[in-house]
Image 1 (cartoon, protein in one colour):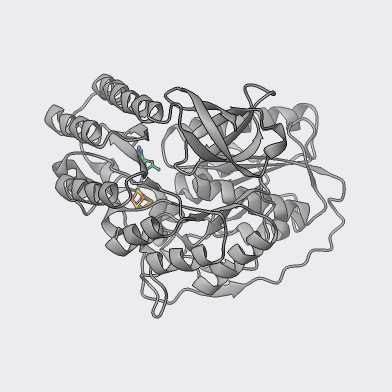
Image 2 (cartoon, rainbow, N blue to C red):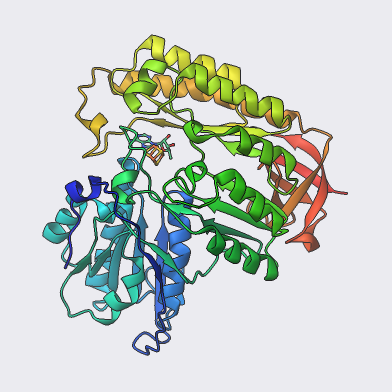
Length: 468
Ligand code: 5AD
Ligand code: SF4
């Protein structure tokens, strides 16, 4: 049994990262024909981890089900970024406990993901939720099969609070056969003062570029149309390695594989280089879409957040991107109600939002995360004020999202069609190069293809169009 430890998770040393080439073959019949239920919350990194977890479960003969009632194994892949994640965990546990007590005493319950890296959460699982069978962290996913096979009737907890390694030869059960996530980097060394990620996911470790290219080439060969390069700070790619490509150089190499569409998330404004901007503007298969988290428009708050840029520097970068990649869509993340954010600070955030006219934005009320520096700051701002600010900010954000979408009206744009629309089975949905969601009529037979679509209607969060 190995428990998470916050002090260990905080450590950063100069020790080299181990690149571990997995060679795991499971010929295990214990679970043959049994069913698993997997629920994943959180960011793209977690979603992609979910694809690894699914592949691992299936390597033991398990098959997927979408109900807890049918399952023999349930796994909850958690997110820890904000407090509300806890409600989701305990809501889920309540349902699983009920199922295990009333209907299926052999049900195996597993908890993993970022919350499993939190000391407080795991201590609580030990003390109050003994019916949870296995807990594994973000550094232990490769041990999932062993954890399941070697259960001995006791709660089995394996959570390393280490700086982390890089695992290669990982199998994924990808959710889509059209677009794929590709990890280029794990962990984060930025330690923004509000953020739990550097503690739950370890230090920044970049994959070797030749492994990334190999993976993308394989995806191209298998007919994939789009890759999204994943990392907590993709544009800091390779910085901790000697003789590795920069992110701009990596983008170029990925572009040369011939994959039709390349995206990447998430960029940190601090690491954004002119080379990157030029590469995006020069390579037609790198999509003109940049997620550029602002977090706050006040330089005072940005300093307290440890973001390493001022409002002016952010705006300078924003203008450079707009001027070099004119059709680029730019989205952002903004936190309101950071400890002691004043009306003036908040107004600066509004001003930046008004200036940048983002294509869309994720907006959040600051949520204190145990163990982070900001959680220790005395905060005099009440929740009602924070909620009002969020509401006000969302009004501005939504106004410009709609405005940005309206610019597409009557235009013909390329859309990668991904599947049947959830709202209307007679329509399909897909995304423009600028990452606008479009519901398209007349294109049922075009799934997996990039087609020209005439935009007929624009709402705040999506477009409607018809194939031409
Ligand atoms: N409270 C609120 N929002 C947060 N984020 C990260 N940590 C917190 C927190 N403690 C937001 C940031 C980040 C996004 C993924 O989540 O805006 O960019
Ligand atoms: Fe969190 Fe900052 Fe790292 Fe993003 S860059 S994961 S906000 S610490």
